[in-house]
Length: 103
Image 1 (cartoon, rainbow, N blue to C red):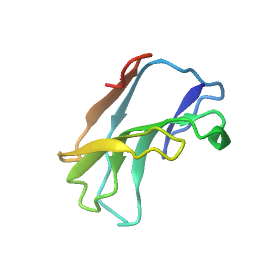
Image 2 (image 1 turned 120 degrees about the horizontal axis):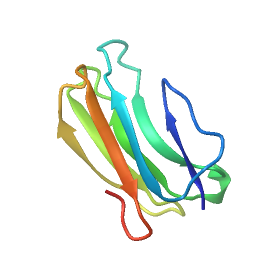
Image 3 (image 1 turned 90 degrees about the vertical axis):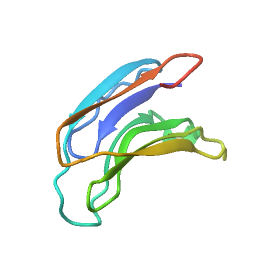
C-alpha cells in the first residue's frame, strides 16, 4: 500500500511512498472555528480502505490542543492522543512509519 503526504494548506506529492519520515513546520493562526488544520499521510487509493496517519490535527478554534491519530482502515478503531500546545506558534511535527511501527 502506498501513501502520500498532504497538508490542508500546502499540497501533496503525486506518487505515494509506503514507509519513511515526514516533517511539517506549522503554525495555525486563530480564526474561523470551522477551520481544521491537518498534516496527514493519505492512501493513494482511499477506496482500498488503507491506513491514514494524521500526524498533526488541530480542530480547537483556540489552537490550544493538537492531536495525532492512526486510522488503520477496514473498520478498525482509530488510535491517537492529544497534547496541549500553542498552535499559533511555530512547531515542527514529524511522523516516522516503518513496517512495524508509527512514531
